[in-house]
Length: 282
Image: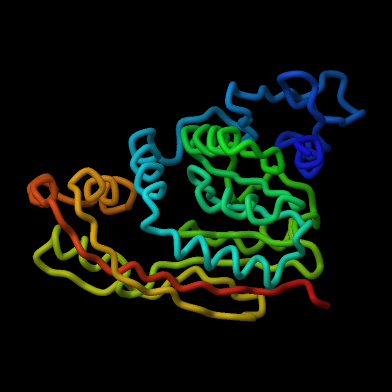
């Protein structure tokens, strides 16, 4: 099935279809004398960003996210993604995970629909590598991961039945380009109380999260749901991993982080809003 997934990809240089030959992907542009070639890594991902790597989450953040998500704290969020996909996306269809990270939600989707396909893209080569390793460890071949920007997807026009944006920026125009006529866009956003307990442990002045400002404007909202629950993290390693996988790691003073390293128990709200959009109906 891996070759079936690859058939949905396109060359980031010229836009032609890609074909696997050995350990590389080659474009099928007959108008070029020298074919564009993209190597596959040992884990199976390819850099289709059209530029050298170096962007996206660092290795430490990817490692923190992998360990934290594997512990099951966000399992209800994955369950809701699977539910929405089953409701709106054909089981044999293609899903594009935009900003897939280390593949936790991606592989939950592919496990739930073995007759379907998934392509995950992320700017971080460490995330793409970890997602590919997760896929191989789970023994599946109906997904593929690439280093790429969500604003320049290496995916053919009109081939995806659904797209997922989980905590990533919304890329409405590019998503509409790759979606089929009846395709849907699932957007997961932090609710106003999301990780409120973590923020209380870090900062003196704590505010609720602002509403998301980059939601689609040219698509039709088909459904909106909210998953909200409380988790208690009872070991410091997972508390620090939660911090390490969030944007708070960029803007938290060292003195505040020191307080976190001394915590052995943390209770916080997990709150995520899900919106399902439809487009291209006309």
